[in-house]
Length: 346
Ligand SMILES: *Cc1c(COP(=O)(O)O)cnc(C)c1O
Ligand code: SF4
Image 1 (cartoon, protein in one colour):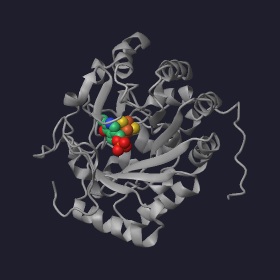
Image 2: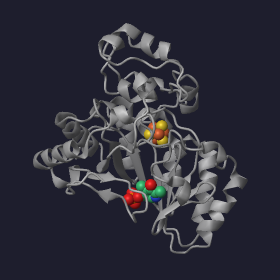
Image 3: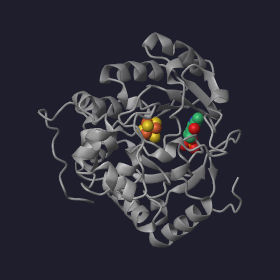
Image 4: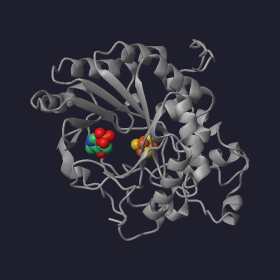
């Protein structure tokens, strides 16, 4: 057991909502903060994209973990708009996962047995350039509590559903009050036993792990699983590590999912260290996702053959529980497909 005490929650630390307001939203500001010039990216072979439709959006806390002066910084590359995004590449589509077809009612995806995924919030605390839902029609999804009724009715009327996954966008973008309202409505549905929260906020905006959130989740009647999303070991430091420890201390199960990303975590040392840091904070590596072939993300793709090599190497260097399952989402399948051992591409 780690003997390091977890620092108490500071009441004078900036509120997460204020930190969202002060997040960096302009490419020039992002570069300024890191002491970089556009020319640095040209010479690094990474020409920038100005005024993308999907804007720059990075909270200070995440920015603070980037290395100044490094155009290849693995955290920076996750949020940096590049000219490569505008390249038309065959096979990279607007909705490769056919989520539109799985949309049972507004705000609810029912693809897999026993569990449904609720688009609980329409925004995130960061814009990840490789996002699989970067083209998702969020405007069509619920935005106020009354709008949840069709989704709640759908869950109420199907008692084969035991687990609700709050996703988004990012469900922790809901205020504490909103989240509690939604939680309480769900907890009145007798056949639900588990609540899962898929969120990147504990990683990119650790102040979101506040006392209200911890008390809501710790007192829930559900067994609560929080699935965070970190891709590189340098994300799991400082405030972020403290926030994860607090979630762990509140008695929740903690898992991580990553996306295999070219130039960011497609090297064995980064993956080993990521798993080690996660386990250190009480988070089990759950999934390593093969990149979904969404329009605008082709420059992040790592071929599965390389992914399998990396996973095999990981397996030889780490205990089994620290090796994530290497998976791909394929439309029409009854679960995510483990691709560690398959030899074919599709
Ligand atoms: C990934 C996903 C889930 C959860 O799948 P698990 O394998 O249980 O983690 C559920 N619904 C949808 C639509 C998903 O994409
Ligand atoms: S946090 Fe997740 S949903 Fe939000 S932009 Fe990043 S990858 Fe997309």
